[in-house]
Length: 127
Image (cartoon, rainbow, N blue to C red; front, side):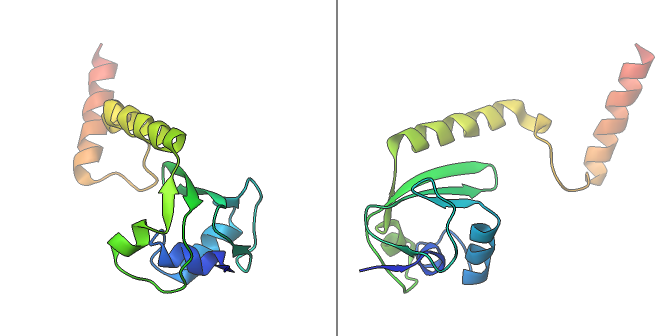
């Protein structure tokens, strides 16, 4: 049994809509067995998917096929994250936590953030 990759990603709850899954595939954030697929590509049980979501990179093995979106417990049965992927992801999360405010944001700073920037610059210039 096989299904389209965009449907499976949506059913496995990696993306909220099929359109977002399709966009992620088209922009190269999803790879099947180290190859860049098209949204219509069929996946089968045993395929390995490399998925980039935000700062996280996941490598999962397809354990089951579904075209219907269910609850989170059912969705988690569709795949299994590899051990090396889980360890690498947890290490990256720890690095981001240790970096704290040093993580670069793609949005404008808030009012509090701007104050902190000004305080830092003023302190640096006074030294």
